Image (cartoon, rainbow, N blue to C red; front, side, top):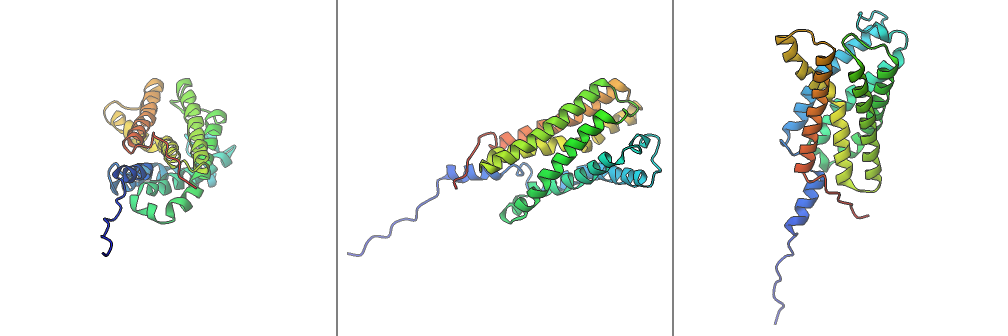
Length: 235
């Protein structure tokens, strides 16, 4: 008798879900996420480009003349964080993960993020404080810079171990901290509109709110996608 046809083996649903979770950090709102992140980065990018142009021309405003004595750190910072924020937005596009985009862009984003974090630390410590800054905001800038650099380093280290879920989680955290300037535009606008120019305490609160909002959303996305559970890929 001819052998009976055996049903095709089914891939366990748990395996499919686990793989999707390891790579699904950008699925919180589908393909809309990259465009929202890109939109969030527009104002800081435009402001950074304008600042870079005035510093390069030696015609900085009163708020930016503190950069003229040592323009290299702020130049490197802007040249790093603008592509980091914009290019990084498309790392959350689910469709692009099927191609080499994610890997090739990541090779640029990790060093760009580190340059942004390290130059941010230099700027916070060595440049004169701008009007409205105080000790609390100075400490926050240092903590955020260290946390961003550490997140990227841990993300790269996890990638070298092929621990893709942990890699994704730490890179999302680093990106969220690096995008603080975009969210801080949103936290400052209502204050300017209804209260006026923030003082030292209120400015520190508004800046901290931007970072905290980003971190909260990042942790929600990581846990929603299961990124908090490391999944080491086989060799």
